[in-house]
Amino acid sequence: MPSRGASPGTASPSPSTACAARRSCSRSPTPIRDDGGVADAFPADVTDERQVTELVAAITGGLGPVDVLVLNATGPQPEAPLSEVAWQDHLAQLDFFVKSPVLLGRAVLPGMRTQRFGRIIQIDSEVADRPPPGRSAYATAKSAQIGLTRSWARELAPFGITVNTVAPGFVPVERHADVTAEVRNAYLASVPAGRMGTPEDIAHAVSFLASAEASFVTGQRIVVDGGRGLGG
Image (cartoon, rainbow, N blue to C red; front, side):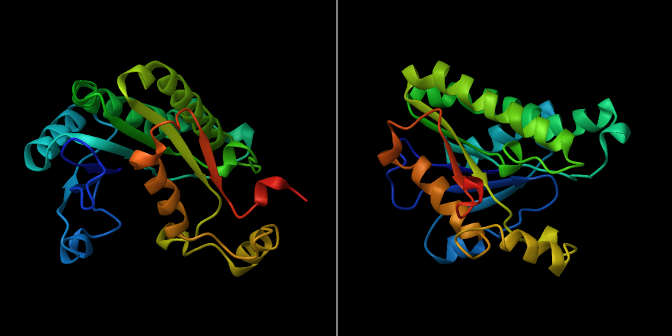
């Protein structure tokens, strides 16, 4: 769960940055510090209510109020046919994509309301639109996350808080090391842009939604997939 906490008004060119993760953040805060920014990492289980409360208290105590919350927590995403998917498998996915956003959103909301400013950005997935076989629990939880985003956007808009979501296509990162070349090439062949997405592609969309320039954008979903969702 990356989140960016800054003093009131995220137009600041170098906001403080906090990364929260169950074990360790995928990106070290060191490059931000080296670039003159303020950053820190906070280990926490963002599906545990007590830890989330302590996490947000630690971040606000060390870096100030959270202005921008990016919800990107994830866990194992097992594939199984519907006949083998138990209710517990659904709950495991809902923990990351619904429970975690609810806990974190509730924890940062008082500060955002006080400032009458906030940006909440969920990371969902193209899988919500194009669910492959064997991913029913994941696709269902991601669809619920989209519904959560839209309902929050409607409710929080009067407080100067925008809520949006970014839906990446397949972006190969460290945890996809076991994906075969055959699977990657088949996916690439379905992308009109002719290349795989990168973490930077997703970051640019998130940065826009977190910016002051996006103050009139809420309840929206930006799909970053190189045109794959167009079909064909």
